[in-house]
Length: 207
Length: 207
DNA sequence: CAGTTTGGATACACCGCTGTATCGGATACA
DNA sequence: TGTATCCGATACAGCGGTGTATCCAAACTG
Image 1 (cartoon, each protein chain N blue to C red):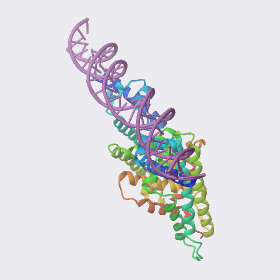
Image 2: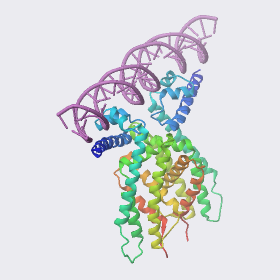
Image 3: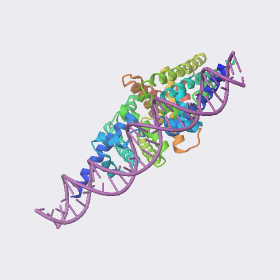
Image 4: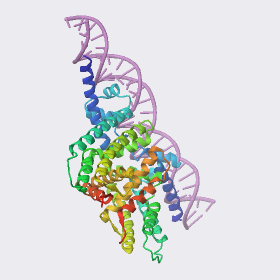
Protein backbone atom coordinates (compact mmCIF):
# COMPACT_ATOMS: atom_id res chain seq x y z
CA UNK A 1 0.00 0.00 0.00
CA UNK A 2 1.35 3.30 -1.04
CA UNK A 3 -0.08 5.16 1.92
CA UNK A 4 1.63 2.79 4.33
CA UNK A 5 4.97 3.55 2.77
CA UNK A 6 4.25 7.22 2.75
CA UNK A 7 3.24 6.99 6.36
CA UNK A 8 6.53 5.49 7.37
CA UNK A 9 8.44 8.02 5.37
CA UNK A 10 6.43 10.82 6.84
CA UNK A 11 7.20 9.54 10.30
CA UNK A 12 10.93 9.65 9.84
CA UNK A 13 10.61 13.04 8.25
CA UNK A 14 8.73 14.18 11.32
CA UNK A 15 11.33 12.85 13.68
CA UNK A 16 14.13 14.39 11.69
CA UNK A 17 12.40 17.74 11.62
CA UNK A 18 11.65 17.64 15.32
CA UNK A 19 15.27 16.87 16.09
CA UNK A 20 16.38 19.61 13.76
CA UNK A 21 14.08 22.10 15.45
CA UNK A 22 15.59 21.35 18.82
CA UNK A 23 19.12 21.55 17.57
CA UNK A 24 18.52 24.73 15.61
CA UNK A 25 17.54 26.39 18.86
CA UNK A 26 20.40 24.87 20.80
CA UNK A 27 23.24 25.31 18.34
CA UNK A 28 21.93 27.42 15.43
CA UNK A 29 20.92 26.28 12.01
CA UNK A 30 24.41 26.32 10.65
CA UNK A 31 26.09 24.73 13.61
CA UNK A 32 23.63 21.88 13.84
CA UNK A 33 25.28 19.24 11.72
CA UNK A 34 23.29 16.79 9.67
CA UNK A 35 25.09 14.12 11.62
CA UNK A 36 23.85 15.47 14.94
CA UNK A 37 20.30 15.89 13.71
CA UNK A 38 20.19 12.29 12.59
CA UNK A 39 21.73 11.06 15.80
CA UNK A 40 19.14 12.81 17.90
CA UNK A 41 16.34 11.54 15.72
CA UNK A 42 17.71 8.04 16.05
CA UNK A 43 18.84 7.66 12.46
CA UNK A 44 21.99 7.82 10.45
CA UNK A 45 22.76 10.22 7.68
CA UNK A 46 21.51 7.75 5.16
CA UNK A 47 17.99 8.42 6.35
CA UNK A 48 18.49 12.14 6.09
CA UNK A 49 19.77 12.26 2.56
CA UNK A 50 17.10 9.81 1.54
CA UNK A 51 14.46 12.25 2.79
CA UNK A 52 15.89 15.67 2.16
CA UNK A 53 18.16 16.99 -0.46
CA UNK A 54 19.93 19.20 2.01
CA UNK A 55 19.59 21.02 5.30
CA UNK A 56 18.30 23.95 3.32
CA UNK A 57 15.40 21.90 2.07
CA UNK A 58 14.58 20.72 5.56
CA UNK A 59 14.43 24.33 6.68
CA UNK A 60 12.05 25.10 3.89
CA UNK A 61 9.75 22.30 4.90
CA UNK A 62 9.99 23.42 8.51
CA UNK A 63 8.90 26.92 7.66
CA UNK A 64 6.14 25.72 5.42
CA UNK A 65 4.63 23.71 8.25
CA UNK A 66 5.16 26.49 10.69
CA UNK A 67 3.24 28.74 8.34
CA UNK A 68 0.29 26.40 8.16
CA UNK A 69 0.28 25.93 11.89
CA UNK A 70 0.44 29.68 12.41
CA UNK A 71 -2.50 30.28 10.14
CA UNK A 72 -4.54 27.59 11.83
CA UNK A 73 -3.87 28.67 15.40
CA UNK A 74 -4.49 32.25 14.45
CA UNK A 75 -7.84 31.46 12.92
CA UNK A 76 -8.67 29.25 15.87
CA UNK A 77 -7.83 32.05 18.27
CA UNK A 78 -10.03 34.39 16.30
CA UNK A 79 -13.05 32.19 16.20
CA UNK A 80 -12.57 31.22 19.84
CA UNK A 81 -13.44 34.78 20.77
CA UNK A 82 -16.79 35.06 19.06
CA UNK A 83 -18.37 38.21 17.86
CA UNK A 84 -20.29 37.95 21.08
CA UNK A 85 -23.10 40.43 20.93
CA UNK A 86 -21.33 42.70 23.29
CA UNK A 87 -22.89 46.03 23.65
CA UNK A 88 -20.08 47.66 25.55
CA UNK A 89 -17.26 48.92 23.42
CA UNK A 90 -14.58 48.06 25.87
CA UNK A 91 -10.96 48.40 25.11
CA UNK A 92 -10.58 45.18 27.01
CA UNK A 93 -12.41 43.28 24.36
CA UNK A 94 -9.99 44.44 21.74
CA UNK A 95 -7.09 43.75 24.01
CA UNK A 96 -8.23 40.27 24.81
CA UNK A 97 -8.57 39.43 21.18
CA UNK A 98 -5.20 40.73 20.19
CA UNK A 99 -3.41 39.28 23.15
CA UNK A 100 -4.97 35.91 22.52
CA UNK A 101 -3.65 36.12 19.02
CA UNK A 102 -0.14 36.56 20.23
CA UNK A 103 -0.44 33.91 22.84
CA UNK A 104 -1.69 31.37 20.39
CA UNK A 105 -0.26 32.16 17.04
CA UNK A 106 2.96 34.01 17.43
CA UNK A 107 4.12 31.53 19.97
CA UNK A 108 6.62 33.15 22.20
CA UNK A 109 7.88 30.01 23.84
CA UNK A 110 11.61 29.75 24.24
CA UNK A 111 11.98 27.46 21.34
CA UNK A 112 10.39 29.57 18.73
CA UNK A 113 11.77 32.87 19.82
CA UNK A 114 15.22 31.47 19.26
CA UNK A 115 14.29 29.72 16.07
CA UNK A 116 12.64 32.72 14.49
CA UNK A 117 15.74 34.75 15.09
CA UNK A 118 17.84 31.89 13.88
CA UNK A 119 15.82 31.46 10.72
CA UNK A 120 15.92 35.16 9.96
CA UNK A 121 19.68 35.11 10.08
CA UNK A 122 19.75 31.97 8.03
CA UNK A 123 17.45 33.57 5.50
CA UNK A 124 19.79 36.51 5.21
CA UNK A 125 22.54 34.12 4.20
CA UNK A 126 20.64 31.63 2.13
CA UNK A 127 19.16 33.28 -0.95
CA UNK A 128 17.10 30.23 -1.78
CA UNK A 129 15.56 30.17 1.66
CA UNK A 130 14.91 33.87 2.03
CA UNK A 131 11.80 34.30 -0.14
CA UNK A 132 10.15 31.30 1.49
CA UNK A 133 10.56 32.71 4.95
CA UNK A 134 9.43 36.17 3.92
CA UNK A 135 6.33 34.83 2.30
CA UNK A 136 5.29 32.72 5.27
CA UNK A 137 5.88 35.52 7.74
CA UNK A 138 4.05 38.07 5.67
CA UNK A 139 1.10 35.77 5.15
CA UNK A 140 0.79 35.23 8.89
CA UNK A 141 1.12 38.92 9.58
CA UNK A 142 -1.48 39.80 7.00
CA UNK A 143 -3.94 37.34 8.41
CA UNK A 144 -3.51 38.58 11.94
CA UNK A 145 -3.58 42.16 10.84
CA UNK A 146 -6.80 41.71 8.93
CA UNK A 147 -8.41 40.22 12.00
CA UNK A 148 -7.15 42.95 14.26
CA UNK A 149 -8.10 45.81 12.02
CA UNK A 150 -11.55 44.37 11.59
CA UNK A 151 -11.92 44.16 15.34
CA UNK A 152 -10.75 47.71 15.73
CA UNK A 153 -13.12 48.92 13.06
CA UNK A 154 -16.06 47.24 14.72
CA UNK A 155 -15.22 49.04 17.94
CA UNK A 156 -14.72 52.29 16.14
CA UNK A 157 -11.21 52.33 17.52
CA UNK A 158 -8.26 53.87 15.76
CA UNK A 159 -4.52 53.66 16.08
CA UNK A 160 -1.92 56.26 16.88
CA UNK A 161 0.40 54.71 14.35
CA UNK A 162 -0.08 53.57 10.77
CA UNK A 163 -1.93 50.30 10.64
CA UNK A 164 0.80 48.38 8.89
CA UNK A 165 3.19 49.33 11.61
CA UNK A 166 1.17 47.65 14.31
CA UNK A 167 2.25 44.07 13.85
CA UNK A 168 5.97 44.75 13.49
CA UNK A 169 5.85 46.95 16.55
CA UNK A 170 4.11 44.50 18.79
CA UNK A 171 5.79 41.44 17.43
CA UNK A 172 9.28 42.81 17.65
CA UNK A 173 8.63 44.09 21.14
CA UNK A 174 7.47 40.69 22.32
CA UNK A 175 10.31 38.90 20.70
CA UNK A 176 12.86 41.20 22.20
CA UNK A 177 11.27 41.04 25.61
CA UNK A 178 11.20 37.27 25.52
CA UNK A 179 14.77 37.11 24.35
CA UNK A 180 15.81 39.30 27.21
CA UNK A 181 14.01 37.10 29.64
CA UNK A 182 15.81 34.12 28.22
CA UNK A 183 19.21 35.77 28.36
CA UNK A 184 18.88 37.15 31.85
CA UNK A 185 17.18 34.06 33.16
CA UNK A 186 14.16 35.97 34.39
CA UNK A 187 10.96 34.00 34.56
CA UNK A 188 8.96 34.39 31.38
CA UNK A 189 5.82 36.45 31.43
CA UNK A 190 6.79 40.09 31.68
CA UNK A 191 6.48 40.44 27.95
CA UNK A 192 2.77 39.81 28.21
CA UNK A 193 2.18 42.75 30.47
CA UNK A 194 4.47 44.86 28.34
CA UNK A 195 2.46 44.04 25.27
CA UNK A 196 -0.72 45.07 27.01
CA UNK A 197 0.77 48.41 27.96
CA UNK A 198 1.88 48.93 24.42
CA UNK A 199 -1.52 48.13 23.03
CA UNK A 200 -3.28 50.42 25.43
CA UNK A 201 -0.93 53.16 24.37
CA UNK A 202 -1.48 52.66 20.67
CA UNK A 203 -5.21 52.15 20.53
CA UNK A 204 -7.62 55.04 20.71
CA UNK A 205 -11.26 54.41 21.51
CA UNK A 206 -13.90 56.68 20.04
CA UNK A 207 -14.74 59.63 22.26
CA UNK B 1 60.43 51.15 22.91
CA UNK B 2 57.59 49.42 24.58
CA UNK B 3 54.95 51.65 23.08
CA UNK B 4 56.19 50.88 19.60
CA UNK B 5 55.73 47.21 20.22
CA UNK B 6 52.36 47.76 21.73
CA UNK B 7 51.41 49.93 18.83
CA UNK B 8 52.25 47.23 16.39
CA UNK B 9 50.38 44.66 18.41
CA UNK B 10 47.41 46.93 18.70
CA UNK B 11 47.39 47.38 14.98
CA UNK B 12 47.16 43.71 14.22
CA UNK B 13 44.52 43.35 16.90
CA UNK B 14 42.55 46.07 15.16
CA UNK B 15 42.84 44.44 11.79
CA UNK B 16 41.82 41.08 13.20
CA UNK B 17 38.83 42.58 14.93
CA UNK B 18 37.75 44.48 11.88
CA UNK B 19 37.95 41.36 9.77
CA UNK B 20 36.07 39.44 12.41
CA UNK B 21 33.34 42.05 12.47
CA UNK B 22 32.83 41.77 8.75
CA UNK B 23 32.78 38.01 8.80
CA UNK B 24 30.48 37.81 11.78
CA UNK B 25 27.94 39.73 9.77
CA UNK B 26 28.53 37.72 6.63
CA UNK B 27 28.72 34.22 8.03
CA UNK B 28 27.77 34.42 11.73
CA UNK B 29 30.04 34.30 14.72
CA UNK B 30 30.20 30.55 14.82
CA UNK B 31 30.61 30.00 11.13
CA UNK B 32 33.38 32.53 10.76
CA UNK B 33 36.44 30.38 11.20
CA UNK B 34 39.57 31.69 12.84
CA UNK B 35 41.30 30.76 9.64
CA UNK B 36 39.01 32.94 7.56
CA UNK B 37 39.30 35.87 9.91
CA UNK B 38 43.05 35.77 9.75
CA UNK B 39 43.06 35.40 6.01
CA UNK B 40 40.89 38.46 5.55
CA UNK B 41 43.02 40.45 7.95
CA UNK B 42 46.10 39.42 6.03
CA UNK B 43 47.56 37.20 8.71
CA UNK B 44 47.84 33.55 9.51
CA UNK B 45 46.45 31.83 12.54
CA UNK B 46 49.72 32.32 14.33
CA UNK B 47 48.91 35.99 14.65
CA UNK B 48 45.48 35.26 15.99
CA UNK B 49 46.46 32.91 18.74
CA UNK B 50 49.31 35.19 19.67
CA UNK B 51 46.79 37.99 20.25
CA UNK B 52 43.66 36.28 21.48
CA UNK B 53 43.10 33.23 23.52
CA UNK B 54 40.06 32.27 21.51
CA UNK B 55 37.29 33.59 19.32
CA UNK B 56 35.27 34.05 22.46
CA UNK B 57 37.83 36.46 23.82
CA UNK B 58 37.85 38.42 20.61
CA UNK B 59 34.09 38.78 20.87
CA UNK B 60 34.43 40.09 24.36
CA UNK B 61 36.92 42.69 23.26
CA UNK B 62 34.67 43.59 20.35
CA UNK B 63 31.72 44.21 22.63
CA UNK B 64 33.78 46.15 25.10
CA UNK B 65 34.88 48.55 22.40
CA UNK B 66 31.42 48.75 20.99
CA UNK B 67 30.20 49.71 24.42
CA UNK B 68 32.69 52.53 24.77
CA UNK B 69 31.90 53.78 21.30
CA UNK B 70 28.19 53.64 22.04
CA UNK B 71 28.57 55.67 25.19
CA UNK B 72 30.72 58.23 23.46
CA UNK B 73 28.50 58.74 20.44
CA UNK B 74 25.46 58.88 22.66
CA UNK B 75 26.94 61.55 24.82
CA UNK B 76 28.13 63.39 21.75
CA UNK B 77 24.66 63.30 20.27
CA UNK B 78 23.23 64.63 23.50
CA UNK B 79 25.60 67.54 23.84
CA UNK B 80 25.28 68.30 20.15
CA UNK B 81 21.67 69.27 20.75
CA UNK B 82 22.15 71.89 23.39
CA UNK B 83 19.65 72.87 26.01
CA UNK B 84 18.96 75.73 23.64
CA UNK B 85 16.92 78.25 25.51
CA UNK B 86 13.85 77.29 23.61
CA UNK B 87 10.68 78.69 24.94
CA UNK B 88 8.37 76.59 22.85
CA UNK B 89 7.62 73.21 24.24
CA UNK B 90 7.47 71.49 20.91
CA UNK B 91 7.16 67.80 20.56
CA UNK B 92 9.53 68.20 17.69
CA UNK B 93 12.31 69.17 20.00
CA UNK B 94 11.93 65.99 21.95
CA UNK B 95 11.65 63.99 18.80
CA UNK B 96 14.73 65.50 17.32
CA UNK B 97 16.74 64.68 20.36
CA UNK B 98 15.63 61.12 20.61
CA UNK B 99 15.90 60.43 16.92
CA UNK B 100 19.37 61.87 16.89
CA UNK B 101 20.24 59.45 19.63
CA UNK B 102 19.20 56.52 17.57
CA UNK B 103 20.87 57.77 14.47
CA UNK B 104 24.14 58.26 16.24
CA UNK B 105 24.37 55.76 19.01
CA UNK B 106 22.29 52.77 18.22
CA UNK B 107 23.69 52.63 14.77
CA UNK B 108 21.29 50.89 12.54
CA UNK B 109 23.64 50.35 9.65
CA UNK B 110 23.47 46.95 8.00
CA UNK B 111 26.56 45.73 9.70
CA UNK B 112 25.51 46.31 13.24
CA UNK B 113 21.94 45.25 12.90
CA UNK B 114 23.19 41.87 11.84
CA UNK B 115 25.95 41.75 14.38
CA UNK B 116 23.75 42.67 17.30
CA UNK B 117 21.41 39.87 16.44
CA UNK B 118 24.35 37.60 15.90
CA UNK B 119 25.93 38.48 19.22
CA UNK B 120 22.68 38.00 21.07
CA UNK B 121 22.41 34.49 19.75
CA UNK B 122 26.03 33.87 20.51
CA UNK B 123 25.52 35.15 24.02
CA UNK B 124 22.67 32.74 24.48
CA UNK B 125 25.05 29.92 23.73
CA UNK B 126 28.23 31.13 25.33
CA UNK B 127 27.76 31.44 29.10
CA UNK B 128 31.07 33.24 29.48
CA UNK B 129 30.10 35.83 26.91
CA UNK B 130 26.54 36.41 28.01
CA UNK B 131 27.05 38.63 31.06
CA UNK B 132 29.49 40.83 29.18
CA UNK B 133 26.99 41.53 26.44
CA UNK B 134 24.15 42.12 28.83
CA UNK B 135 26.15 44.58 30.82
CA UNK B 136 27.27 46.60 27.84
CA UNK B 137 23.78 46.74 26.38
CA UNK B 138 22.17 47.71 29.63
CA UNK B 139 24.72 50.43 30.28
CA UNK B 140 24.06 51.94 26.89
CA UNK B 141 20.33 51.71 27.36
CA UNK B 142 20.50 53.30 30.80
CA UNK B 143 22.55 56.17 29.52
CA UNK B 144 20.21 56.87 26.65
CA UNK B 145 17.19 56.43 28.83
CA UNK B 146 18.46 58.87 31.41
CA UNK B 147 18.99 61.46 28.71
CA UNK B 148 15.59 60.91 27.19
CA UNK B 149 13.68 60.96 30.43
CA UNK B 150 15.41 64.14 31.45
CA UNK B 151 14.44 65.70 28.16
CA UNK B 152 10.87 64.58 28.60
CA UNK B 153 10.75 65.91 32.14
CA UNK B 154 12.02 69.28 31.05
CA UNK B 155 9.20 69.47 28.53
CA UNK B 156 6.70 68.27 31.03
CA UNK B 157 5.95 65.42 28.69
CA UNK B 158 4.86 62.01 29.82
CA UNK B 159 4.70 58.57 28.26
CA UNK B 160 1.81 56.29 27.58
CA UNK B 161 3.92 53.30 28.55
CA UNK B 162 6.17 52.63 31.53
CA UNK B 163 9.45 54.47 31.18
CA UNK B 164 11.63 51.39 31.21
CA UNK B 165 9.69 49.99 28.33
CA UNK B 166 10.53 52.86 26.05
CA UNK B 167 13.98 51.83 24.94
CA UNK B 168 13.18 48.18 24.28
CA UNK B 169 10.13 49.19 22.32
CA UNK B 170 11.88 51.69 20.12
CA UNK B 171 15.06 49.77 19.77
CA UNK B 172 13.45 46.48 18.89
CA UNK B 173 11.16 48.19 16.41
CA UNK B 174 14.08 49.82 14.64
CA UNK B 175 16.09 46.67 14.58
CA UNK B 176 13.25 44.66 13.17
CA UNK B 177 12.40 47.29 10.61
CA UNK B 178 16.00 47.48 9.47
CA UNK B 179 16.28 43.73 9.29
CA UNK B 180 13.21 43.60 7.14
CA UNK B 181 14.65 46.19 4.84
CA UNK B 182 17.79 44.13 4.57
CA UNK B 183 15.93 40.91 3.86
CA UNK B 184 13.54 42.32 1.32
CA UNK B 185 16.16 44.49 -0.29
CA UNK B 186 14.17 47.65 0.21
CA UNK B 187 16.20 50.80 0.44
CA UNK B 188 17.00 51.63 4.03
CA UNK B 189 15.25 54.53 5.67
CA UNK B 190 11.68 53.54 6.33
CA UNK B 191 12.57 52.60 9.88
CA UNK B 192 13.33 56.22 10.61
CA UNK B 193 9.87 57.40 9.78
CA UNK B 194 8.40 54.46 11.62
CA UNK B 195 10.31 55.38 14.72
CA UNK B 196 9.01 58.92 14.51
CA UNK B 197 5.43 57.68 14.31
CA UNK B 198 6.01 55.43 17.25
CA UNK B 199 7.45 58.22 19.33
CA UNK B 200 4.64 60.60 18.51
CA UNK B 201 2.23 57.91 19.60
CA UNK B 202 3.95 57.24 22.88
CA UNK B 203 4.75 60.76 24.04
CA UNK B 204 2.11 62.98 25.59
CA UNK B 205 2.72 66.69 25.83
CA UNK B 206 1.22 68.62 28.71
CA UNK B 207 -2.23 69.98 27.99
C1' DC C 1 4.91 -17.08 -0.67
C1' DA C 2 8.22 -15.61 -4.15
C1' DG C 3 9.57 -11.02 -6.47
C1' DT C 4 10.12 -6.37 -6.32
C1' DT C 5 10.61 -2.02 -4.36
C1' DT C 6 11.42 1.04 -0.79
C1' DG C 7 14.18 3.16 2.77
C1' DG C 8 17.55 3.36 5.97
C1' DA C 9 22.45 1.65 7.31
C1' DT C 10 27.31 1.22 6.15
C1' DA C 11 31.63 2.28 4.04
C1' DC C 12 34.59 5.43 1.66
C1' DA C 13 37.20 9.34 0.12
C1' DC C 14 37.73 14.02 0.98
C1' DC C 15 38.06 18.48 2.99
C1' DG C 16 38.57 22.25 6.28
C1' DC C 17 39.25 23.69 10.85
C1' DT C 18 41.56 23.45 15.33
C1' DG C 19 45.28 24.22 18.55
C1' DT C 20 50.01 23.61 19.63
C1' DA C 21 54.85 23.55 19.08
C1' DT C 22 58.54 25.44 16.71
C1' DC C 23 60.97 28.54 13.81
C1' DG C 24 62.87 32.77 11.80
C1' DG C 25 62.98 37.64 10.61
C1' DA C 26 62.30 42.13 12.11
C1' DT C 27 62.67 45.55 15.81
C1' DA C 28 64.43 47.71 20.02
C1' DC C 29 68.13 48.65 22.79
C1' DA C 30 73.02 48.86 24.59
C1' DT D 1 76.54 46.93 15.43
C1' DG D 2 75.63 43.04 17.97
C1' DT D 3 72.26 40.84 20.85
C1' DA D 4 67.86 39.92 22.98
C1' DT D 5 63.12 39.94 22.37
C1' DC D 6 58.97 40.05 20.22
C1' DC D 7 55.53 38.42 17.11
C1' DG D 8 53.80 36.50 13.35
C1' DA D 9 54.64 32.38 10.00
C1' DT D 10 55.00 27.47 9.32
C1' DA D 11 54.48 22.65 10.20
C1' DC D 12 51.97 18.92 12.23
C1' DA D 13 48.66 15.73 14.15
C1' DG D 14 44.02 15.05 14.79
C1' DC D 15 39.06 15.54 14.60
C1' DG D 16 34.52 15.93 12.76
C1' DG D 17 31.65 16.84 9.10
C1' DT D 18 30.26 16.13 4.07
C1' DG D 19 28.13 13.75 0.27
C1' DT D 20 28.02 9.64 -2.49
C1' DA D 21 27.89 4.94 -3.71
C1' DT D 22 26.65 0.58 -2.22
C1' DC D 23 24.31 -2.81 0.47
C1' DC D 24 20.76 -5.25 3.01
C1' DA D 25 16.39 -5.94 5.40
C1' DA D 26 11.76 -5.21 5.78
C1' DA D 27 7.56 -4.07 3.71
C1' DC D 28 4.46 -4.19 -0.19
C1' DT D 29 2.76 -6.74 -4.53
C1' DG D 30 0.28 -10.27 -7.00
